[in-house]
Length: 466
Image (cartoon, rainbow, N blue to C red; front, top):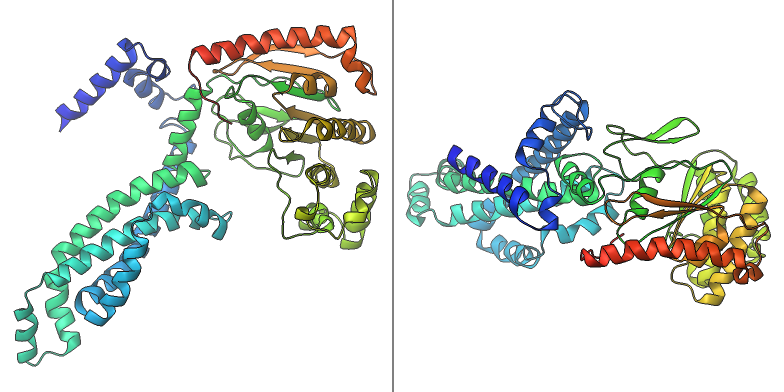
C-alpha cells in the first residue's frame, strides 16, 4: 500500500517538475503541499494549524454522516421490501429503474432550488447516491436467499415477523454490509462534487477553492475612492467576475483581504457574507419573475425591516419615477418589460437599499447598440444624482472609458492589475465626447494593454470562463 502512495507522489512530482505543460506548471509539487499543510502560518490560509481546516472537515463529516444515516434508514427497509415482496417489487423497481440512470450531479440544480440556502441541498444529493447503492444491494441480498430457508421457517411455525428477523436479515446481511460499504465510498465522492457546486464549506469546497487559486493565484485588490466610478476590463477568464464575487461576498479569498471603509469583507478563514451594503446588478438579470416591479424594488428594505411597507413603496415609486417614468410599470411583471426597462428596475432595486457600493457585472452585454447607449446615459444620470461608489465589469473599452472615472486593466491569468487609467473627461458625460481627441488617446492606451493580454491568453490556449 505504501509503495502505491510513494509511487503516486513520485509521479506527481515528476509531472510538475519535468512535463512541459502549462497546466502542470501551475500545480504545486507534493513537497510544497506538505510544507504548506504543516505550516503554522500558511501562505494560502489553510493548514492543520488553522481553525478553517477543521471546520471544512467537520462540515463534510456531518453531511456525509447525515446522508449515510438517512440512506441506511430508508434504503435497507426498502431493499428488503423489494427483495421479499413480489407485488411491492413490481412497483418500487419500476420507480427506481426510472430514477437510477439520472447522474447524481444532475440533481444539484433541483436540490438548490428546493433547499435554497440550507445544508439539505448537498446532503440530498449525497443521500441519493448512498440510497441507491444501499437499496439495490439489500434487495439483491434478500433475493439471493435460498427459498427453502423461507419454507423451512414456515414449516416450523415462524410468523412473517420471525422470518424477517431469523431468515431475511441474517441471510441478506453480507449484501447489506457490501451495499453500505459501496454507499459510504460513493457518498463521499458525491459529497465532494456537490460541495464544489453548492456549498460554502467542506472538503469539496476547499478543493474548488484550491483549483481557483491555481487559476487565479494573485488577484490584486486596488483602492476605490468614495463615490468613484471604476470600470474593470481584461481578457476573458482573467478573474474580473471572480474579483466582483469576492467583493460582493459570494466567494472567499485565499490570501490578502478586501476592506470597505476599514471593515474587512473578505480574508482567509472568513466566511463569505453578502449584504445590502454591496448590491449586485447581474449580467443575466435577477429580477424575481413571480413578483411585480414594485414588489421587486421594495423586497430588500422590507426583508431587512429597514422601512415600513408604505414608506418602502413610496420611496420605490419615487425612484421608479426618476428612472424614466417606470412608476407606470410598478404593477407589471419583469416578463412584460423590455430588457432596458428590466435593467433600470434592477438598478433602482439596488439603490433602494442605499448601498455603499454598487457592483455591475456586464449588465448591458446582451443589448443592441441603441439600447446600450440609452442605458449608459441612464446609469450616468443615476450616478450623478445619488453619488454611489460603482465597480463596473465590462469587455467593452468604449463603455468603460465613457462611464468611468478610473479604468483598471487586468492581465490574463494569473489576474493582476496591468494598468490603471485615470479618465479626465469632464462630467456630465455626453455622447459627443466619444469623438474627442482626449477620448481617442485614452482608448488607444487601454486597447494596447487589453489586446496584449488577449494575445497572451490566446497563445496559452486559455478558454473563456466567467
